[in-house]
Each structure stands twice: as structure tokens, then as C-alpha cells.
Length: 143
Image (cartoon, rainbow, N blue to C red; front, side):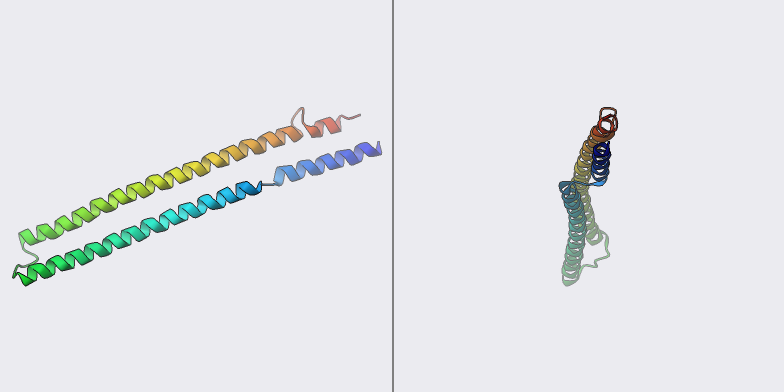
């Protein structure tokens, strides 16, 4: 009987460690996905800043050309040219943001798929240890 108690304790210890352990690969995958998502968000912000800076430079250059030509930069046609630059940049930013958002969503979806797969594996391990036909029940009913 003493051997059964030791065996039962070993099984319980095994069950406890299996239920609380997280595979090292799972931690790495989680970190990789979080880093990639953060990287994409930083890239998106940098790209927006670069586009806005280019717009400011292009607008300033256009205003300088208008002024050098003796054209008032707030007149109708010159204002339309500047508005066209603004609209073009806005469309480009919207396209870039849509691309980044799609890539971010794909990364988040991939991460969610991996989490679901790991959860299924964890549940399968728990069933193997403590389910109706699990090792712990076999040890418990050893006698």
C-alpha cells in the first residue's frame, strides 16, 4: 500500500506541473507576435510622420514658387493646387494605413490561431492526466 501512495503522489505532482507549465515555444511565439505587432505600429507612425513632413515641404516649395511668380498663394487656382497636394497625401496615407491595418490584423489573427491551438493541446494534456481514463484515475483506482 505504501508504494501506491508514493505512486499517487508522483502522479499528482506530475498533473500539477503539467497543468501549470507553459511550453517554452509558446512563450517565444507570443513574444515574437507582440514584437511584430509593436514594430508594425511604429512603422505606421513613422510613415505617417514622413508623409506629413513631405507634404509640408512640398506645400512650402509650391508657395515659394507662387510668391516668386507674383501669384498670391491664397488665390483660387493656387489654393486648388495646394489643396490637391493635401488631398493626394491624404489618399496616400489612407492607403498606407489600410495596408498596415491589414498586416496588423493578419498578425493578430495568426497569434489568435496559435493561442487556440496551444489551448487545445493543453486541454488534451489535462484530459490525459485527469480525465475519466486519465493517468490520475488509473493510479487512484490502482487497488
